[in-house]
Image 1 (tube, rainbow over the protein chains, first blue to last red):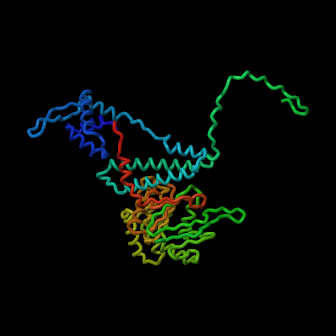
Image 2: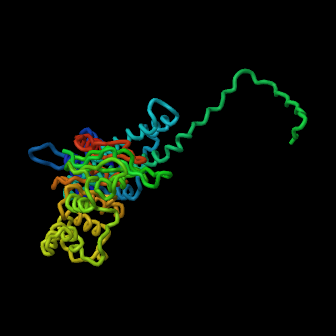
Image 3: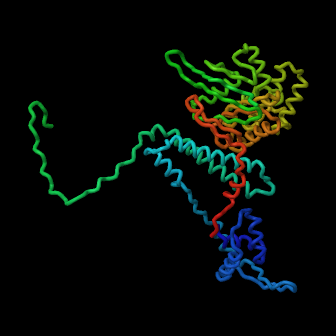
Length: 207
Length: 246
């Protein structure tokens, strides 16, 4: 996720100092935030260099002076541009399960039926857990979490439907054999072999 | 504690020369208070199995037991009575009587069982309230949406507080939001009233609400998946909330 744009989106609401920004992040996105404390500060420094944010020094009597950051007009434009640009969706289509399934088709200790069954079981268990989490989520206070759970539900559903389709295709896949790799040419190149003489066998047609 | 039990259950359609096996030597046990989903491709025999469980169809060979009652030992009247008192059915196509109101539709099983009309209508209203349709009880099916009609059908199935609810693709005709609501209502019936639910579906999202899924293929059970009691919620939560930072 883009730390830079997340900070701009928060500062768009009102000016904040660094510590407040960190806390707001956890609250708004409701995700585990693995960022090191220095990362917010260094991103803010880069935003300041790019003139997307600015700061004022706030003087307090009983604490060290701190910077209160605010978004600039340039920063607002950058934020708007980010919202207007669609995200690139990466699908892990050619993932490890796909490879495993294709390999099981060419023969091995476990049949493709079993490979599909094992994967299906795992996906149903995950879908069950996600469904349970959804049942107990509170729409008034946990909407971002609910959106995430519904996204997980639909992706798992899609995976399960694909597995169902693979199962339906298994009879076809049984006749699948991978193409043989082209034989490697070895040794010295030979002279062109002369065409064999057409044999004249009595009783057969020439054409 | 098992409530439904089958023993080498088999159903063959067609005749001697062209037999069409729909269900083949199925041994299945359903526990009291369990939510079991039966899944499988078209033609796998899942609906046939459901109808056999509910006494709506007679097996070719094998037996179905409801607690200690052997369904094959009952005559038509006995079977009819058992179905009315012990089972509630929900089908894909709502099967509501178009000239009756929602309340009247739901009251029918009670009236058939000999309840006085006023008491039956009152109980029907309570059942409608449980599915969130208390304010639509005087509407006819044509005045209700698909999701609402299916909820009326569910209320009708629940009004006799049956021990076992059998549902055949109850969300098949609904959009995903209504389907989800229906699945949640079914789940609540199991959790709150300890009713047993056997549900046939091809929709993974609905099946995920179950405690156990049984997979059918060509009339036989080919896989079984226990969903309840895994305790993976924390693991899933972590997986979902760890985001890559840049």
